[in-house]
Image (tube, rainbow, N blue to C red):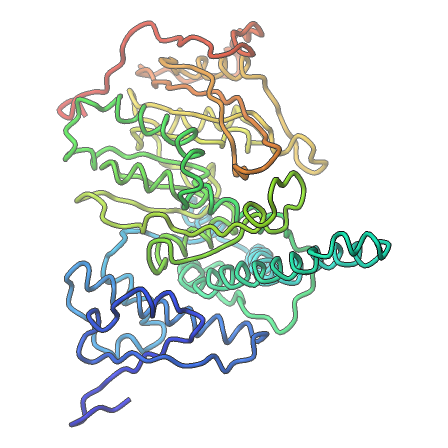
Length: 518
């Protein structure tokens, strides 16, 4: 709004639904001269989800711009630049607070890498799939309330005497509904930033993120609930133990292998992480000074990682209740089932100089089709069993690595397509897989069994435990060797696995090539 003497001023009013910002931060000390802050009551109907989400998301964006400029001592953008659409997104990215490259989505990225035209039918099918994922994000509230409604009906059908004994349950149902509203707001905020993702894909041009009506038909709501749990694993203090189990062995192996390599030169080493999920392991590796690129195929993960890496307003400023619909194996409903988790535990940014940190959307086999010998390390975490043909993964990883490059793996073999009627699935035991890895020219230097959880509620009465295979393998110099179909490896079924803590198979110490050799 106009200020005195024709100066341009911006009045930013925070709704009372964000008391944390108003009560715990000295906002006045963060504001540039042209910005005024105020507080207003929410006047929108609470069921007006689209308007509420869009407005609140833009408030968070503007506020995070101010905080990030202040923290990094960067000059403030002109108010006109912040108010233009979509310049508000450009302004955030222009500060280079996080050097995250979001490339084209799924099929379009693969087609671009392979120089193949995408048909109109393919583009239409991809847009429909993307919109189905977005609808599932937006439909969470209705889905979750249906779950609570079923419990309410069951309670209403109890004998009056039993209802009297369980008279606290209506209050519990009410608390669940409040937690569901918090989750829906979190999911709405993710979708409100989807334009930053779709804008980089010619394949998704025209894809919608707002709908006047959403039918539950065909929506995969289980994946939305899994996405909430994935945020806990990757971006909360509650997920630290899981990250130590699954991610730390990989980062430790990477640092050990390049321990003699000068830290300030690590950025020259390229690490690829297929199946990157929400990007935490990729980010952690980049923080160590390595140039790291994550690749992900799932739109649920891509939309969520795009938000948390690029648009998170601040450390522990986003709330969710990941276990609110999990009513079985609960010790204490209030303390555990309704527990609030804050994300992110760390605001992405502050990477070492020259580090290239990026996320690519697409199929691992397609996107990197023409990158023979271009990677120094491939790290796979809970990824190998996503293959319909795991031999193809091994072959492709060997192709991508330079001679002397390393492959670090940790994960189980819970083959994702084993029960699928529509997708072929080749399922190998670990001993069979190990022989295939050696056949393709890898030398396994470290090997052990690691116990890991995956998106588990640490307070649950039941846990699924994975006894994961961990190994570090080096790609031996090829010397012109090209595996052929006639060279069939000898596959052995004898294995030390199945007993606790199998010994390492390493017979000597390993060391990465020196910077001069590279």
